[in-house]
Length: 404
Image (cartoon, rainbow, N blue to C red; front, top):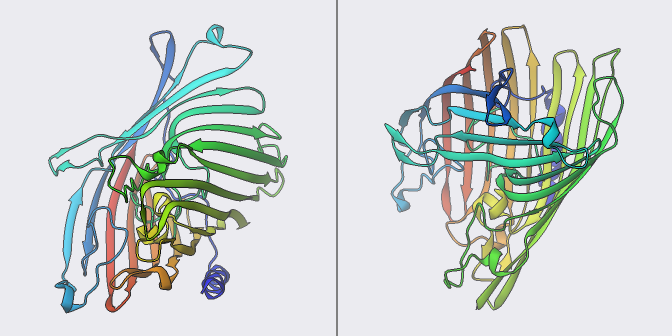
């Protein structure tokens, strides 16, 4: 199964030709900085509104990770759904203390970023912390403490602006962590190649708070050890041609412990190995994506959210990834086409469980103003089930993003 999955992803990559990062996802305008105490604060963010139509039901209309089965035996039909929301509106701040407060020649900074996707009613949305960390940087070494994105599989597709195809091919999320990064050069603007090596300790159970033995303690924390993540990356750009390339290899390992055995086991391992890449193959044309494999990945958005087989007492293996093509056809219009797949091992999935989750998608983004982006995304999304009919959804997401 792993072999056929890898071949499908490679074939998809050969059919596509991709861009760099998606417009409007993470790019933001920054202010020159305003005084805040003894430090300076740079604000950034955007106001976003989403309108979404599905012709079949997903597990969550605003934050989908799979399509529900359309098997009449489970009472779900291919019924349409429409929703609007402003929850991805984002506000962030970068904080820089004064230079005379720095220690040992380090540069000190912090970042706090929020949106409004933490539940609540549709007119009373709750705040969600996305990033909240402190960094201490020397010439080539950076120490980070706080919540930010996982080291593994650091890229994300241009589509599905909140869940980013998690549990459908895109691995990694955000969690509290401590991280140390070394870089061989400060930047690649002058065409110099840069190697980076990063390692970190992350909070287990931050995404999937498993408590299989029901003792009131998350199984990852009960192991007494954090998960270990690492990534080796290489980036290079040419000042002459303007072409760039970035590749990385990453992985993680962690442990979960139980006081009462489940499936005859009182300890489970979680691990992954990933490759990520971004390549500019021609002016305004690039290809990017990720390929990964691992086991017990529900805390890292893999295995379609299924980590442990309770019946067999095994971690569920899974393989997947995504590939995306993007072309800037003009200064106003950018087109991206992609494919994403999460394929857990069928043998460890119980009856009516999810055995494959994949989607083809097209992203149309229009830069109507330097600060205003309008997008129209289409996904043809399929989730396959064991012993049930598949779920198939045609999803259209229209959105606008005004940066500040």
